[in-house]
Amino acid sequence: MDFLGGSLELRERQRLEGHTDRVWSLAWNPAAGVRGIPAMLASCSGDKTVRIWQEGPSGSWDCLAVLEDTHTRTVRSCAWSPSGKLLATTSFDATTAVWEHVGGDFECVATLEGHENEVKSVSWNTSGSLLATCGRDKTVWIWEMQPGNEFECVSVLQGHTQDVKMVQWHPVLDVLVSVGYDNSVKIWAEDGDGDDWHCVQTLNEASSGHTSTVWAVSFSSNGDRMVTCSDDLTLKIWDASSSPSETSDNSCGSWRLLCTMSGYHDRAIFSVNWSREGVIASGAADDAIRLFVESKDNSVDVPSYKLLLRKDKAHDMDVNSVQWNPKEPKVLASASDDGTIKIWELLEVPL
Image (cartoon, rainbow, N blue to C red; front, side):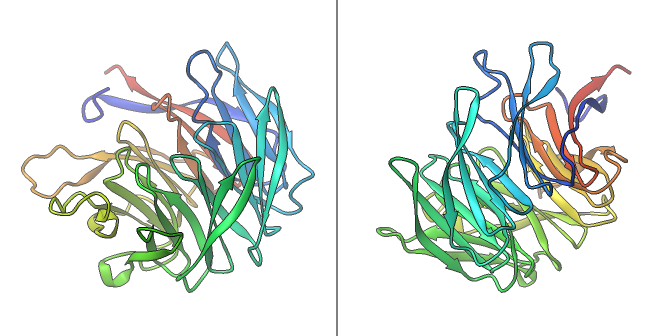
């Protein structure tokens, strides 16, 4: 699909209903949607439940399972392990639960405790050996998976001065990014030989960063760029590929601002996600979704990004999460305060 020519439409394929409160977060199962395995999506909500949705043979989506009676408060975040066999969920009840998908059932096999209060986000590293969580207690925890679905905390990272909103592992390196209420983006890496994790770079106002809460971060598929979104109504693209003299092992601390996109949302931008095909989706408190791509304007030396599509009134209330399907990169899922999830498809419209 030529994203820079012709007309595009983000068409609603299905609305998924069942949650009885706002839907906070979505996660596509990375092992589903290929080799005859139906596509699968997890959603979590203020109704204290996690729902697992599966695509049927006809293309319609149904609720496969409701994971309940484990978390006692809002479930804020969910993430599948790379194998697609484990699902981690974090809650305002200060715990992280790990669920195992066995046959058609989901069983809670581990409960991770340690955060003082609300746990806001969870992310698996590429190998599935490490899990990161973050929360309102200003900390980031790194957990190592042990045999028998046991998890051991190997590091508690302290550096943020406020609520940490999201953690995200780099798609290639064991490098972790956290963002938060202190307006900063922090890059964490491990010391060469131990479990000693430390902050290798902080991107804040002094480094042309955000001027208000940073809500989310997402990497390009090869990990040389990342995009962040904020209460300051901007999206920022950061680049780490500009240091050819540095080896990939330590380039994790060399992020620089590439460009800032402003004027596209008029309320806080809560979610951003970069597709495998290079399309950035954003969702915001203005009920809208925006799509962006890199501009191919060769007259400009510095790479820039341009608006690809506006979808106003994507939901009836705030859009909390936008997630591209990793196996079908034209398919986008969104979740909202209106209690619904929508499955969208990016289509070319004949002129």
